[in-house]
Image (cartoon, rainbow, N blue to C red; front, side, top):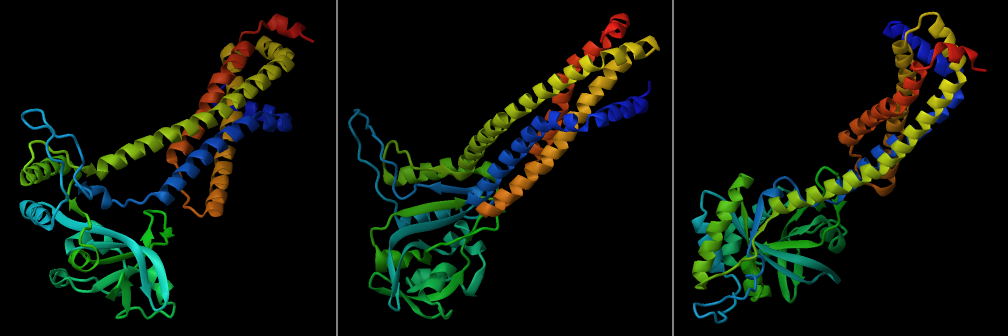
Length: 408
């Protein structure tokens, strides 16, 4: 028998017992649907709550807030002085050393209550320079009204600020925020611009954000003279991070005059790589759990195929006596199992995509189609058909024609 004849015969046989065929592949449908839905929904959740864009992956945060407090030993194994806070002079030295090779920005943080026209809110006030606006990806946001402040504002410690759309709506619901004053402590700052709230990369989800940006000199001179300075460095290529990090740490160590200093240096690209590796492991675990349903479905296919062989033993004997070869019987029964599992895989994939879309709508996160899950579901259903369908097919092919004819 050729392949076309074998396929037609297999389909005709399955149609004769349509209900049993449908029930037999139900386990495969559920297994594939679970695999697709779990992995795709998980990746959709990751996409929604990820806070890092491609540009932010190139960031290197150096000496965050303070030098890391370590036990430093001098030549006599006595405790040496502990590190001190970074200064503006340290920032200038690093920026000068890395000129034309990286963008060095400064950032200070001040958390507190801000007030305007009888309203108040808790917010984070970021002190930055124009380089800091670029490094912190603030400059990449859409400026909805006005403009960012410039180098002259930082040089003069000007009383100007930029706020998020959420704060603008809170303080000025009528929509007229430019030029008006916002109080940080007792100091009034004039609003020069309004920027869009944070948007999760690839998710299209906007996060409500209470943030204010103002010149870092303004925070040091007008708001909080003891605010901790953070240096952030943006490079063109992530592979440059290790060399620049070592250079910066050596420069800062020599400026601090300590024999051995460990700075709190964070390579965000490496951190994100580790986070993605961890989420990939979780996705694999979820896929493995869903794969158990596929195994259960495969056992159901094997059970049905064994029942088919038993019911059609006399038919097998008649066909064998008329010259049907064992290899033809093997192909037919194996093809029947494959048709059941592949059909279940296709239906399961469609069901899994439907469940993913439903959950994405309920939880308001993006639909992320996991091609690994889609291909894995269809491939697994094919392998299940081959593995669990082979033994019943082999049994049918090995039946003795005389014994099969005598079967009642």
